[in-house]
Amino acid sequence: MRYILASGSPRRKEILTKMGLTYEVLVSEVSEEHEQMAPEQIVCELSRRKAEAVAALMRNRGDTEDCCIIAADTLVAIDGEVLGKPADRRESYEMIARISGREHQVYTGVTLIKLPEEQVDTFYEGTDVYVKALSSEEIQAYVDTGEGDDKAGAYAIQGLFGPHIDHFDGDYDNVVGLPAKALKEHLDRF
Image 1 (cartoon, rainbow, N blue to C red):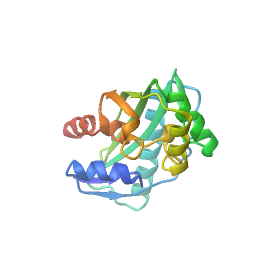
Image 2 (cartoon, one colour):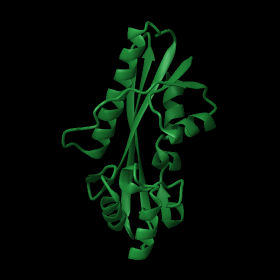
Image 3 (cartoon, rainbow, N blue to C red):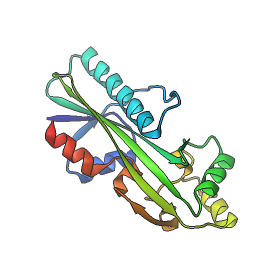
Image 4 (cartoon, helix red, strand yellow):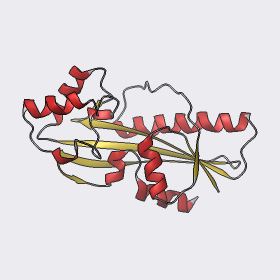
């Protein structure tokens, strides 16, 4: 089985490598705009769009023999509101201030498409993350690193923000960007 990762994310590549999978990367540009839905519905919808776009690219080039496309989308939510990628450092500060001293959720939706059979499997994983209470100075110091500039929720658990996490309930890899345990279970069923 050939695996195609429909993402250029270094974190997702690292997780697949850690899982022992050999894979190719084929990224497609799809809109991440979405209707108002529950966070878990959003990540499933966006992962499906990404997987379908890569499947279409594979079909167009006639390269569909015995392969499985893996696409994912991750977002952060607090009080049912989605925190996307921050537009600027001010928004990063606001996001970190909002999750400081509180629990929030990280959702990752994953879509697998097996070709040429056109078998599709979409699922999501949720993880509850508890952040320590941070001072305004600590928040500003983290924001100034720029690490969270392109991350959902404006932070990276695997990076400099890690020490600010009190604890989490669920899959750590899900917070990083790809739920390894659930992915393995779904791939095994494929």
